[in-house]
Image (cartoon, rainbow over all chains, first blue to last red; front, side, top):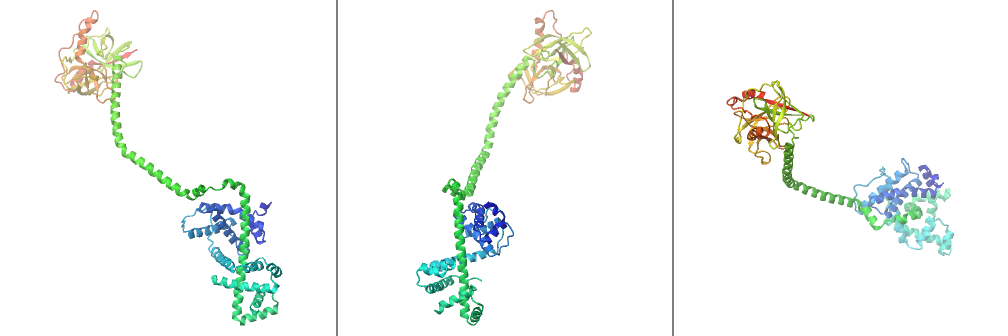
Length: 190
Length: 368
């Protein structure tokens, strides 16, 4: 039942657009063996395969969520191409200049997607750094408010502030500091 | 505080939570206040980054969860499939190892091969030497076989047809005596002779000497009136080495001339009763006369050595003569043969000699 639900690529894309976790899970499980095989055959380990594949899935996922994906080929090919690019880059970073990679499939150039993904990745890393530098309780506070979108009342209670205004002020203070740290490290290239 | 207050405003502005007139007022404020505009822009970017960060983080968590779930599903299989360290190592280096192995294999076998190649000529020489020895052995065997063949009179000198053999014979006296090899007439029921001129006589074997491979036949025909005067004589002394000799015979239905020299004073395996001659001979030549330049019969063709070039043998005429003298004593009521005394061939050219001779050389046809 579950499988037949996402038989086609369109069904998977629609599922992800509609925030269906099962679609994502299905997609993930469907193509992991292929990428894992590719990475393992090209001097990679299981863990590296997992990392690369997750990155590839993220690229795909974000493209769908942006509605910027024009799927001109199969998802399989797209994922393979992305992961291939990422893995080549990783190999180059590791200092192993593999001139030849064993391809089991055709692949796309992806001239646009990868740079954009790298930019996002950089931003993501800077933000992660900034947040970890921020320290507690600022970090949890910001995460609760902005990521988990808890309301100010809950946050006030959780962190033991006297009222929501104190909490808000605290939040803005934290935000101010985060801003400083973030923009110190991150200069948008656009 | 103003600072934090303005953040609240900015956030509300960005999230679109402002009422229309408040928004307009705020936008106007942004347009006039550059610092505020910068702050708004920065804040927007920060929020966006944070938003993305949050999204991506949750996505990653989700993916990790899926992965863990997937691994959990595959766990039962994975227990056995967990790659041992050596398997990982092998997977990584299999290609390199394969290349190294093939290179070493190639070089090992290449070296072996080239060493073999270098050795080959040396080995060939030894092989040739061994073979040479073996050939000697073989020749000995063949010689024995031939001797056996000669004495058993089943030799190569007889015609191939099983019920009918043929050889060569020649007249020894004008009154109807013919000599041939005894192996030609071996096991014969009836024997016929025929010469180039078409004369055909029935003959009977009157005497044979197995040891010298000779046989005397006598024409047994009422109409026979004698051969006439024989043109050749018999030589009693041994002939010299290198003497030019020739023979006439019937290796096929027509008479064939063969010429060569006397190449050895002894015959097969040092047999002193015969000569070795270098005349190419074929089955059917057996029993033919061997003559020297002066037209003396010096021997009777008997056989050749297989696998050896130019080694044919002929029984010396001295033994033929001895046999002829022995014959009357051994055979009852028989007169001694009158051998030809004068030689009509000496001094003639070879073609003249042959012309005179050829009527006295017969094909001996053996029926059984």
